[in-house]
Image 1: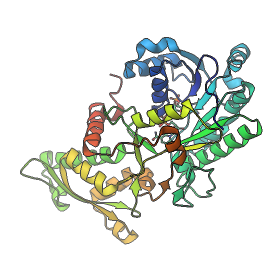
Image 2: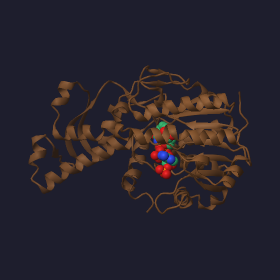
Image 3: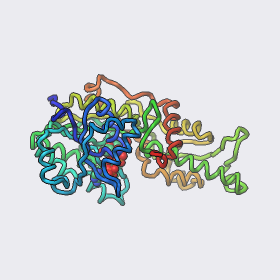
Image 4: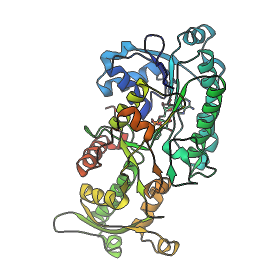
Length: 393
Ligand SMILES: NC(=O)c1ccc[n+]([C@@H]2O[C@H](COP(=O)([O-])OP(=O)(O)OC[C@H]3O[C@@H](n4cnc5c(N)ncnc54)[C@H](OP(=O)(O)O)[C@@H]3O)[C@@H](O)[C@H]2O)c1
C-alpha cells in the first residue's frame, strides 16, 4: 500500500548523514528544497553541525544549511541520548525516518562493534519511530544482506543462514528486526538495498574510497613499489618476477589476480543511488524491499583491463584460483591477495539481484554502463584526493 510521505513540513529525520550515502541522501533532499533533521554524532572536538557543514561545503550547498536541523544523538542511550523536551518535541512532528547509519566493517574482529551499531542500535531508533508514529521508516540495508544460500535474490525478506561476513549477517538481522517491529506496531516501512556504490559517474567525485577503489589503489601501491625498486635499487627483485619498465615508460607487471570462482562485481554510481532513493521516497510502498543494483555487473577481467590502462601497467591476468595455484604466488601476487582479502567475495560474486519493485518505483531507470571513461573519472578524482586523505583540503 502506498505511504503518505514526510510529516511536519515535508522533512525526514536522517541518520548516517556524516557518511557516504547518508550525505548524498541529505544533499539530494536539500537540492529539492526539502528540510532534513540530522540525527548523528560529534567526532572528537568537532560537533555534528561542524561535520555536516564541511560536507555541505564539499557539495557546494553551504547556502542551504538553514534547511537543516541538528540533534546530537547516541542510539544506545534511552531517548537517543536526547533531553526529554527535545525528544518529545521531535516525536510530535511525525517525521519520516531514513535510518542510514551503519558500521560497514566486514572484519570478524569487529563483530561486537558491528553488531552493536547495526543491530542493538535499532532498539532506540525503533522506539522513536513508534513514539513519533513516523509516517514511514526506511532502513538502508544492503543487497548483500541476502546472504549466500541462493544465487537468485528477489526483493523479499532474507531467509539465508549463511553470510560472507559479519556485516552481511548484521544487515540481515537488522532487516528482520525492523520488519517485525514495524509490522507489530503498524508502522509503514521499506527496506532499501544498494549493491556496491562508487563515486559520481558524471563528475568522478566521491567521499569514500573502499570497495571498487581498493583493488585499484592496491595495484597502484604495488606498481610504485616496483618502480621504486627498479629506479633506486637496481631492480633485482623486480627482474626475478619478470617486472621491467618498457620503452614507453609503462611498467610490465606480470601477475595473476586469483578469484575464487567465475563471478562479477555489482556496482552503481552514487548519483544513480541518490536519484533512485529520491524516487522511492516520493511514493514508498509499505513493506516493499527495493534493490538498487545493476543488471550488468562487471567482470574482474574488465576491471583489470581498466586498471592496467589507468595505471599504465601491463601483464595482469585474472585466474579462477585453485589452492595449488595460490601456493605458487609470486611476491606482488601475494601482496595484492593480502590487500584485497576482505573484498574477495564481492569481486567474483554470482548473486543476481532482481529489482521489480525498484523498476516499478522509478519507471525502470537503470544505472549507466560502467565505461572506461566513468572508471577513469572516478579514479582520477580518487588519486587527486589521495584516496580520501586530501578530501576536504
Ligand atoms: N557504500 C556502499 O557501497 C553501500 C552499499 C550497500 C549498502 N550500504 C549501506 O548504506 C549505509 C551507509 O553506508 P556508507 O557507505 O555511507 O557508510 P559510511 O560512509 O561508513 O557511513 C556510516 C554512517 O553511519 C554512522 N555510524 C556508524 N556507526 C554508528 C554508530 N555506532 N552510531 C551512530 N552512527 C553510526 C557514521 O557516523 P560517524 O560518521 O559518526 O561514524 C556514518 O554517518 C549503511 O547502512 C550501509 O550498510 C552502503
